[in-house]
Structures are given as structure tokens and as C-alpha cells.
Amino acid sequence: MSEKLSSTKDLKRVLGKKELMGIAIGSIIGSGIMVQMGTGIALTGRSANIAFLISTFFTICNLIPMIFVSSCLRFRGGDYTQIGLFAGEKFSGAYTIVYIFKNITIAMFALSFADYFLSLFPGLPHMAVAIGVATIFFILNFFGVNIMAKVQNLMVGVLLFALLLFVVFGMPHVDFANYFSNADGNFMTDGVPGILSAAATLGFATGGANMIFSLSAECKNPKKDIPFVLIASTLSVAILYGLIATVASGVLPVDQVAGKSLTVVAAEIFPRPLYLFFIVGGALFAISTTLNSKLGSVTKPLMQMCEDGWFPKSLADLHPKYRTPWKLQLLFYVVTIIPIVTGFKINQITTIVLIIGYCITALNTVMCFKLPKMFPEAWKKSNFHMPMYAFGALLFLSLGVTIVQFYSKMRATTIKIVLLNVITIVVAFIFAHLRLKSGKAKPTISYEVEDEA
Image 1: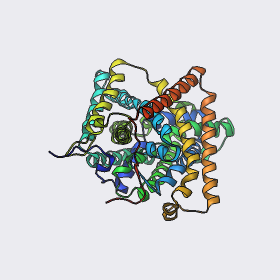
Image 2: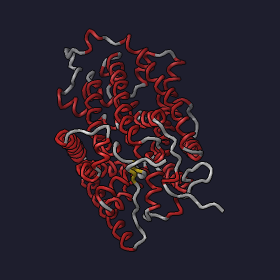
Image 3: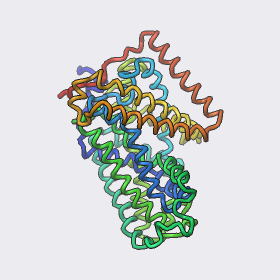
Image 4: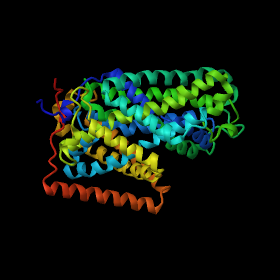
């Protein structure tokens, strides 16, 4: 009888640059762009396109530590491995709890899909549609990351085509003679504070490429491909978003599109058949590609957590043919379905995860300063090797942006949410302490300096 496979070492290394680009772009372009575009216009008027570029700058700054470390090492457990390597076992153990909380929110994508689907086909049961789309993508991911990536690239192609159609059909309707004029008070509404507020709000729409970091164990050449894709996918989508924002804010009067979704402008510029295609290929595929990316990447760090003893190792068993962690996939399928069936509100969990997420980003940035000393040879070979003063300056820039984002979020956060964050962190560290003390958790080396065959 063949030995059961359950290690991240046993995953198929089949993802190249093309597959990672599809996954990253699909992760970035989610349902947020359909709704948040209107929010950005409400905050800063026709300068929403500039706000997207500023937001992209913030996003790239957040990615700087990940770009550096991923150019030197393969992290089979993604963020989990990175935290354990640079911050220690207790921090990685605590992160396991945060990671589970973070990914309970997958149900939100299935529910958002159902919302848009019912706008086209009213009368269908909302719960059944949400469960149906979640089931389809869980089944797809069961058959392996290679199949998942091929379907992802196909959906991303349709998605990009739908969004480009929006730009092509919309640009001729934009009044560029008055677009950058503030005579009507609708360019840079509320001045610099307004555009910065819009940039902060749009951060959710420009982020998401970091999801590919969790797929490092399945990459052919992660040290070259992951850093490249992190930058290229984010910048590519930013340019597209800027063009979309120009159309969204320049076709109709600002007061008619502020706070509204892209469908308002789409209905104005498209004939009915293309409008329906835009809803399906744009809105539904934007959500689908994000959901597919989430489900494809979520189990890989968990596999490493199981291998290290934080959770039962048997949960990480791989399917003998498809090399997929089918037990963890099934577990997350149940976790996704429960909020849909029960109507459990997960908004508070999202807020908790976001605030703790800023703390983790700051921690990873500070710990990244250790990289050149811990792995001097790997750092010298990195495509992003640079003088230490430049390395330090970029990390300080990244840390500064994270602190500003954290401060902005905390200002709008209630005491209740702050307390829930503190409780979550305390419980996470207690779990890590007890698991280590019991001897059940024995973290292993889950990074690779040289790529193994």
C-alpha cells in the first residue's frame, strides 16, 4: 500500500508565470470595483482615476516586503512560513487562528455572486444560488491546481474583455474638454483630503495579488515569477481601473454616478445585449475569479500548519491522483456553506481580520530587515538585490504606509471592534503557547533556498 501524501513538498509544481498572472488578476478584480468605483467618485469626483493610481502606490508599498522575501526563498506555507521563519514559533502559531478567521469570509463572495445573478434572473432562491456557485468552484479545485488555473485564465480573459469594452464604448462619450476642470466643483471634490480618502477606500479594489504567495509550493519558479507577477498584475489592473474610472466619472454628471455601481454608466453606453454581457462577464466573472483564487490558495498554508502539528496532520492528506488536500477542501466547503445557510453576519469578522492584517503586514515589514543577514547568498542572487540604504528606505516607506492605513482604519473603528481584535490576538497566542507546551506542535522547515526538482 502506497504511503499517504500530506506534505506541501508533495504538491505538484505546475504554476508558471502565465497561470500566476491569471490567478493574481482574478484576485484583484473582484466585486469591489463594481461598487467601490461609485464610492471613490463620491469622495473625489472626476479625479477618481488619480485616486486609483495613488491607491495602487499604497498597495505596491504594502507588497514590498513580500517582493523581497519571495525573490530569495520558496515559502511552501506562504505567510505562515514567513512569520515562523522571521518572527518565531509563537507568532506563527498565533497566525494559524487569524488565518482561519480571515478565510471564513470566503462566503461573502458566494453571496455577492448570488446578488448579481438574481439581478439578471430574479425569482431564484438566493441561498441556492450562493451554495451552487460555491459547490462548483470547490469541485473545480478538487481536480487540481492545474485545471483550476486553466479555468481561471479563461474567466480572466472574458472579464478583461468585458471591462475593456466598457472603456472602448465609454471613452467617446467622455467630455475631455471639461473633464479636468473644477468649474463645477466636481474635480478633486474636497481637495487633497478627498482624493486621499478615496485612495484609502479604493485600497480593497487594488489589492489581492498577494494571494499567489500562498501558492509558492505549487510554482515552477517562485523566486522569479511571484515578485514579477505581484508587480505586473497590480500595475496592469491599476491602468485598467484608471481608464474605467475616467469613463465612470466622465460620461454622466457626477451627481448621477456618485455612490452608484458601474451598471448605471454601463446601461448608458451599451446596447442591451452588450449590457447583459457586461453584467455576466464583468460583475459575475469578477466575483467568480476571486472566489476561484481564494479556494485554490486557502488550503496550502493550512497544509503546512497541519504538518507542523498545530492541527491534526491527517487533515492535510492529499488525493493520490490530483494531489489536492481534499479533507481541508471539504472542511472549508462546510465553513463556507454555514454562513450562507444560517445567515450569520460576517461583517464584524471582516473588520477584525482587516485590523489584525495591518498588524501582520507591519510585523512582516519589520522582520524583513533580517533577510540580508539571514540569507546573504540568496539575497545576493535576488533580482531585487540593491544597496542596503535603498533596501532600508523601501522597507521604511512600506512601514509608513501601513501605519497610515492602520491609523485611518482605527479612527473609524468602534471600541467594541478594538476589544474583539485584542481578544482574538490574546486567544491566538494562548493557543500557540498551549500547543507548543503540549509538544504536539513541532514546526518544521518549510522554506527552500534552492528550488528542488
